[in-house]
Length: 317
Image (cartoon, rainbow, N blue to C red; front, top):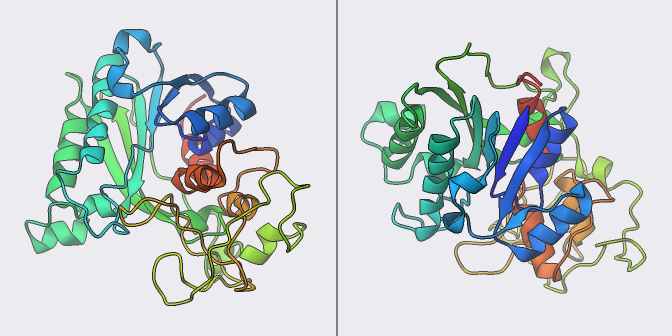
C-alpha cells in the first residue's frame, strides 16, 4: 500500500513498513539531521519542513497515514507534562492530514503518558487507560471524516516483538468505516518467560555481539559520550544487564534538553551511538548524521522497526 509518513524522523517506523512490502510515497520531518539520515538510507528525499507549513494539497494521496507524532510533552519521563504543552498540538497536524487525505487506514504511535494527560474522570477510565485528553484524541480520530473510522488502541511492549528493549508505547489503529475492518493489533512474537512456545525476549548480549567493546572510529557511529556512569535508579542511570533487554531508549530527558544515554552493561561508560542503534534494531548500514547528541536523539525518538513491521503486516499490500 502507499504510505504517507508524518514525523518520519530517521525512519524507524518507515523501515518496518518497507520491510513489510509497503511503499513510502511521501515523508516529512522538520529536523535537518534526521532528514539527512533518512535520505542516506532510503535513497529518497523527505520534505524537511514544519508540517504546519505544508498544505495538504502538496501531499500525494495514500492508502495509509503513519506517524509517531512528537511526544515529549506527553512523556511520563517529563515531570512538567501538561495538556497545554505546545509540542502536543502537533497531533492536530496528523488529524488534519487524515481529514484531508481520507486514507483507508492510519497508524499512530506515542508514549503511554498520553493516556493519562489531563487526568482521569473515573476509575473505569483509569482501568481503560483513557484520560481526559486521550479520550478527546480518540473521538477526534473516529470522526475525522464523514465516513468515520473504527479506532482501537493498545499498549505494546517492543520486547514482545523481538526488540532487546523494554519499551511500552501506545499504538492507535484506524480503519475507514466504509471498508471491511481488518486492522487488528499483532500478536507477540517473543515472551519474557518463553510461554506459549514463543522465543524468549532478546537480550543486550545478543544484539551487541560482534561489536568491539571499546568505541572505535573504524565503525560508523561507534562513538559516544564521556558523561560518567552513575547508577541511581533514575532515567538514564539504571543498570543495563547483559542478559536482559535494555531499559527504554529515549530521545531526551524531562524537558531539560540533551539526550538520555543508558550505561553500557560493563557500567564503565555509556552506550555508543551504534550500540544504542542496535538496541533500537537499526541495521549497521543505517548511518546517522549530525552531532553525536543529535544521533542519540534520532535513535531515541524512533519506533523500532520490528514493532512497526508486525503492525504493517496486518495491512493488505
